Amino acid sequence: MVENESNYSAANYRTPDGAPADIVIFTIVSTEKQSAKKALPTRELHVMLIQRNIWPFEGQWALPGGFTQENETVYECAKRELQEETSIEDVHIEYFNVYSTPGRDPRGWIISHAFLALVNEKLLAHRAAAVDASDVRLFTVEEALRMDLAFDHKQILSDALEGIRKKMLTTTIAREFLPEEFTLSELYQVIQTVVQDFEEPNFIRKLTSTKSRSTIIEEAADENGLPKQSKQYSQRAAQLYRFTKEEPQLSIYS
Amino acid sequence: MVENESNYSAANYRTPDGAPADIVIFTIVSTEKQSAKKALPTRELHVMLIQRNIWPFEGQWALPGGFTQENETVYECAKRELQEETSIEDVHIEYFNVYSTPGRDPRGWIISHAFLALVNEKLLAHRAAAVDASDVRLFTVEEALRMDLAFDHKQILSDALEGIRKKMLTTTIAREFLPEEFTLSELYQVIQTVVQDFEEPNFIRKLTSTKSRSTIIEEAADENGLPKQSKQYSQRAAQLYRFTKEEPQLSIYS
DNA sequence: ATAATAGTGTCTCTGAGACAATATGAG
DNA sequence: CTCATATTGTCTCAGAGACACTATTAT
Image (cartoon, rainbow over all chains, first blue to last red):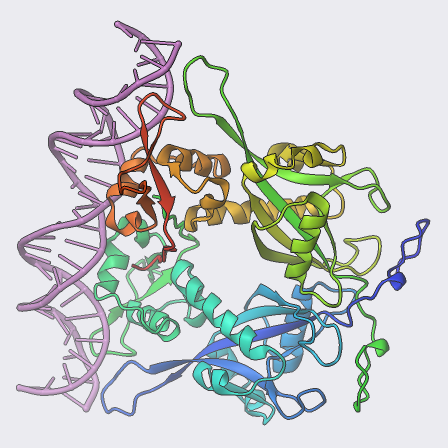
C-alpha cells in the first residue's frame, strides 16, 4: 500500500480477497474418419478443464486460472496461469467478462476476470502428455456443460461459448483453429463446428466471388507465384487460402 | 473473510486495495438551429465528468465511479454510483473492460471496472440543475479527450468511444439516444453524431424497403392504426418509426 | 467404375447505388 | 415563390439462392 500525505488508506475499507483470472481454453479436436478413402475429419469443439486438488470444490473440475499479483495486469496473469497450468504459450487470448456475484467463491470476496483462449490442436500435440495428465483434460463442450463444475464456472463457460459463436461469424478468429494455409472446406467445417446451425450452400463461391467478402482471404501461392493446392482430404486437389490482415466492418445500416 | 476447515486464508496473500467501477456516461446534446425556418438540430456527443475534490488528482476531471462493496456485484456498484453521483437511473449501462495496470492508481493496487452508459438528453433535462453544478459537467468528447483527466481515464474514455462506435453500427443502441418514436432522419443524424464518417445516401429507402433490415424498425401508428407522422423538424411531415425487439444477426460469411 | 471432395453454369429475383424528380407546407 | 426536409422513380449492375452439372483422382 502506498502511504502519503493524504488521509486515504485502503485499510479503512473492506477490500477484496482476490482478483483471479480464469481462462476458458477452446480447441478443436479433429478425428480422421475410419474410411479407406480420403475424407474430411470430424471435428469437435473441446474445452480444457483441471481437476481441483484442494478446498474449495476439491475433486471437482474447474477452469484453469489463478490469482492476479500486484505487479501484473489481469491479462498478464491470464497468460502466466495458462503457461503454468497447461504449458500453452503464444495463443489468441482475450478478456470477455467479470464475475463478482457476492458468495460466488467460499474463500471470500473474490472478483474473477474471465478470458477465453483459442488454441490450435497442432499446438496441443506438442504437449499431449501434459494434457493427458489425470488432472488436466479436454472435454467436449457438451460434456463440460453437463458436468458439475466448481464455482460459477458453468456460467462462465456458457458465456464464453456464446461469445465465441458470435465472434466466429463476425470476425476472422476461425484462423486460430486453422493452419496458416487451409482449404475453404476446412474453414467451412471449422465454422460449423463452433456454430452448429451455420449452413451456407454456396459458401465457397460466396467467399471467392463476392467483392466485399473476398478481401478477407487470398489464394496461397508458392515461391513461383503458382497457386498452392492440397490433396490431403480429397481426391481432387483443393485450392489453399490464407487470411489477409483485413478485418471486416459489419453494419446493420449499410 | 470466511474461515473454515481448510488452511486457506487470503490474509496470507497480498490482496487488491479496491475494485471500483468507473462509468463513461454518453449523451447527445441537441441544439436548435437559429434559423427562421424549421430545421434539424445540430447534435453533439457529450460525456459526463466530475471534478475531484480530494487526493489523488484533486481538482482534475474524472469519470464518475466508486468502490465496489462486498455485498454487491460490480454491475450493481456502477448503477449505484451512477445514481449517487448524477441522480441518473434506469438507463442502458453495460460493462466493457477492466483496467489493472500496476501503478494506475496512487492509492494502491486498484483494479477498475469500466462501464458505459447511454443517456437520453430528455432524462438529463429533469435534473439540469444538478448537471450544472460546478463539479459535474458535460463535455463534448473532443474536449474531454484533450483534457488531462485523472488516472487512466483518458484511455478508458477512448476505449469506450471505440466500443460505442462499433455498437452503434452493429446493434440498435441508437435507440437509447432517441425518443420512443422518431423519424428516420433523426436516426440517421444520431448515427452520424457518434460515427462521424457514416454516410449512406439512400439511408431511408434502405431501411424501409430492404427485407433483411426492415425487421429492426416498424412504423408508428395511432390508436386507429393510422400511421403517425411528425412535423417537428420539417415542413413536410415525416413518418415516425419505432425499434422492434429484433436484434440483427450479422455475419461476414453469409 | 465408384466414391468423395472441389468446383462451375445458369437461372431468377432482390437489392445496392446513383441521381433526378416530385411532395409538402411554413414563411 | 422559396426553402428545407421527405419521399418516389428509374435505371443499371452486383450478387444471393437454388440446383444441376462437371472435374479430379485414389482405390
